[in-house]
Length: 43
Image (cartoon, rainbow, N blue to C red):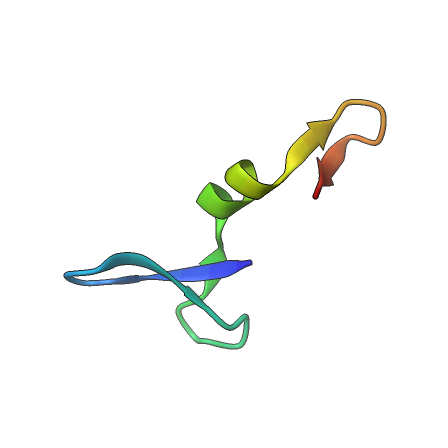
């Protein structure tokens, strides 16, 4: 789950090897949930 900021479009999905790629935290919060016991996000 990676994204990059594109002027005029906002945040768009991209491949992790893209030089401007960063973790897509918006998508993470939408598609995953936090597991208290495991202390990590799960799909």
